[in-house]
Image (cartoon, rainbow, N blue to C red; front, side, top):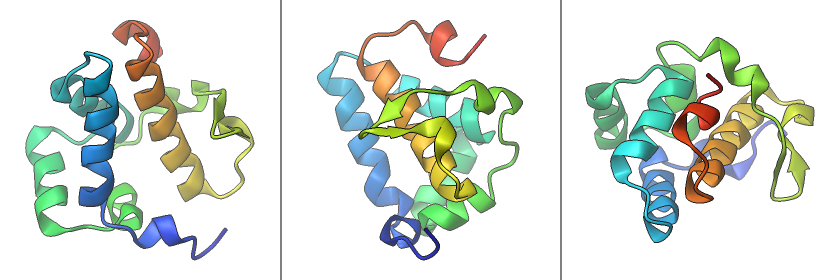
Length: 116
């Protein structure tokens, strides 16, 4: 999937969509930030900096401080695709984040979302 259009999208374009999805289901921006931080290692300032700099999705994940070791435990379907079967490492990370936000929006408990 090298060169997939989503790789060059600005993360600042995706972030509000994640927040909107969560807020429609009475979850918060802070919870979305917590999920993103857990997966990528970004703190609030680092996440804000990536958004303000206009980093694309590929750069956002490439510069992630510490991808969580339990991310391999993120499994299931996102848009009909099994997260754990995605071959491209970058696309898998994108799908993992999508899955976490989906779980948040579906009302799953945060400790379950964060695989604790």
